[in-house]
Image (cartoon, rainbow, N blue to C red):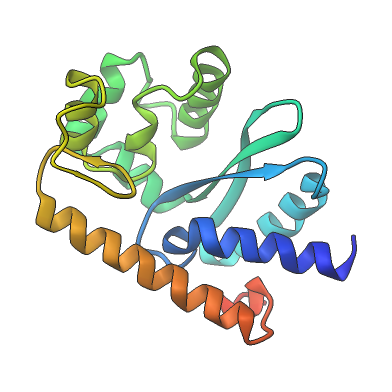
Length: 189
């Protein structure tokens, strides 16, 4: 792997998954080119180095030229999936809440292969359950605000989250612009 590919991978992660990498969001998705990156090598390095921070990355879906990756904090994701309203919605979609986060991610990955982006993916990405429910009930229309997701509940809470996510992105991207690699910027050995 070239030095440029190594740094490019870090920049893509920083831009698309900073809130998760910095601990304020349980999970984030990023779509990367299979032609641009040796994803097996990058995932192996990331999972080995970032495990000390509770971070993981896994392939959720593969197309001809791209891979959809999920970057997540397993503990935070597990907590999120067992919140009352989230758990009820996932159970309605056939998820076994006793199976653990990895088995639930396996099911989500299978559903992504079968139907693209199933609506419950928002629950895994830390979107408020009321917004995921509103999206489903309104077929993606009649939302109050559109930012990182379509908002059907509290606009103010969503605006604060969107602002915090952008602060994370700016902070982490600025660190990489200063010459740090993604692991140094995250204080991962």
